[in-house]
Image (cartoon, rainbow, N blue to C red; front, side, top):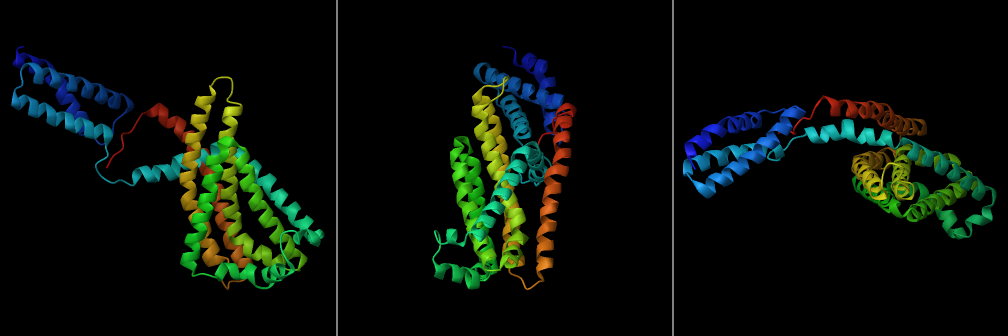
Length: 327
């Protein structure tokens, strides 16, 4: 093989690959071109090594290939751009995409909780099935309010954050089996219903709302999202739709569920901070509830308003081109 002729014939492709690899941003066509040139250059290097292994040519082409592979992978240095993109685009878009599931769960579970609180309050003997008289007295006089200040705020916030994140993740992961989601929801619904009913019976309903609302609006919404997304995953294999197999539908919704699970982690951290620092604070009840309501409304705007825009942008971005991750 005439090495000089071989190199001269393909040198333009290698230079073009190196030129593309040096750019920070590529269009979809340029990204595809880089991948094709990289694949062809690896073949060229293999041919040179097997037939005429000139060390200078091999070293030069190997260097160019390393640059091309680094440009394709772009994993060498830390960048905040993927995280920023996730929280400004992918996560809100998925929340908006699944909105009817978690909004429906919010409406149904909130109604059931209200009915259960009313029923326990109207039938005090029901509470005795779960709590003794001594337990009820301690709950009303000390335990319910004291729970929020029993530990140091930072430790309590971490504990609440971990527990709620685990519960939400369990709802999403168990959704494929459907039934476990209802069990998890039922246990928590019963706890809220009995506690709320006991507090209302003891004329402490205002205390119940004062200590539940500041963090509960956001915290329970996160739980409803986990439940709705989990059931959406389970519904994928029950009714995948006419154009998809059950496997494809389940994979698509499971990916969506994992994205939402990741996004719920910092959201539940905010709820944990509210529960640890705002709920038991000496601020007037109206201020505490107002802070919780404001944070909750901001989250709904993030999910439904920003999410709607992010969903539209995702379709537009697919048409305008692909941008390689940059350091």
